[in-house]
Image 1: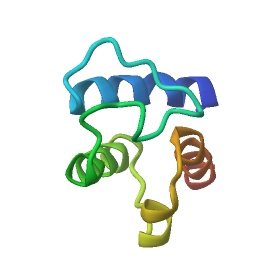
Image 2 (image 1 turned 90 degrees about the vertical axis):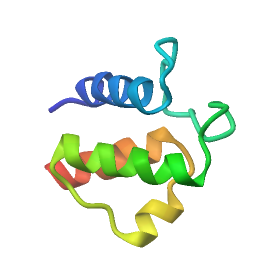
Image 3 (image 1 turned 120 degrees about the horizontal axis):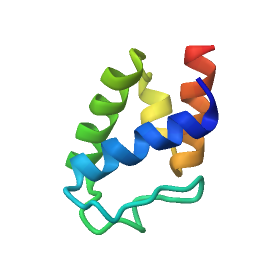
Image 4 (image 1 turned 90 degrees about the horizontal axis):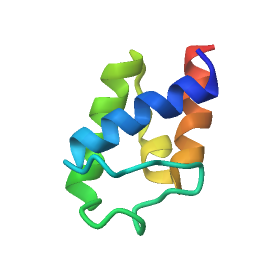
Length: 80
């Protein structure tokens, strides 16, 4: 799976979780960029990403992700 394909899937997940079809994530997208992205939605988001890609993030990864780019990097490592 390419980085581009991961971003396409993440766009679908973000749009679903935040119920906003206009969301277009980039490597720099973070919780400040999406109004409803709070700690509860972060958990929902992480669970949806794990399910979609068949991976599990550890606690350090979940709490350490600063933006979508870091999330994509971790996904790439785990599916390689």
